[in-house]
Image 1: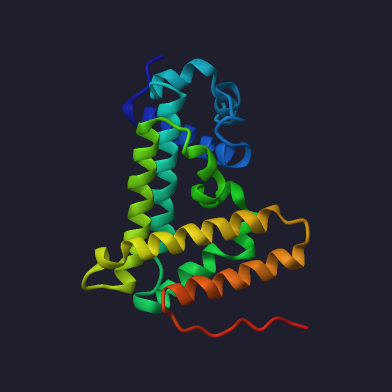
Image 2: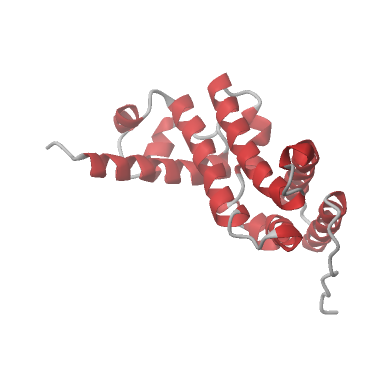
Length: 200
């Protein structure tokens, strides 16, 4: 049976979304083709109908994940500095920490991305700069490129904070780390914020 282009596109997107969850949960090296395709409800051979290789799939997933992060978090945040605080608070939230399958690919995959192919590294670079430039446009609307490196450094600090918070066995300490990370990120971005009051 021959499937139409619409079915092929839907199947490709299903693979990308299922692979995104698996890669962030088990890592790139820990996710074999069999597991990736099983998650999408397909056979191993179906991978090669849609992608040249596992590396091609990983590059596509990374680009798709960052495009989604930009569209659903960065682009939807309020304009200006209020939006900066929304973005930081979403990124360093307990919900994001505890929902890594649907979270940021940077926090989940950064240590493995450095060992990936140049194509995957380029897909990551393009994707992360799209996110960073969206944030930078709120910080310096007239010249976002002037603060790109500053925002990229802040983004790196947030990804590291999220990773460390996920790794801590002490939940209270992990929560305190996220809150300190919020303060640090907003300070780096020169954004005034109200402290979050926690119930005692």
